Image (cartoon, rainbow, N blue to C red):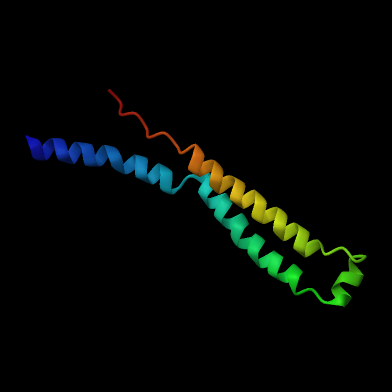
Amino acid sequence: MSDLQNEVSELERKPATAARLFDIRRIIGGLFVLYGVIVTIAGITASDADLKKAENININLWTGLGMLALGLFFLVWLKLRPTAPPTPDE
């Protein structure tokens, strides 16, 4: 009987783990951080000709920093308010 209870409790934990793993905030935050790093690096390494095209505004740098901030916001939000595990149906 104890084995059956262990199996049931293990199966009840799996959906909660899957829900946390595939939380959309994790995916969006991770992608924004990744793209933000790439765009920020492009902004840091911008040439004078690139800056001249954009009227001396380093748009890649500012956009990359904004993407990093948004991605970190999603990841912090996920950390502070994790998804609640689904309640088992009666």
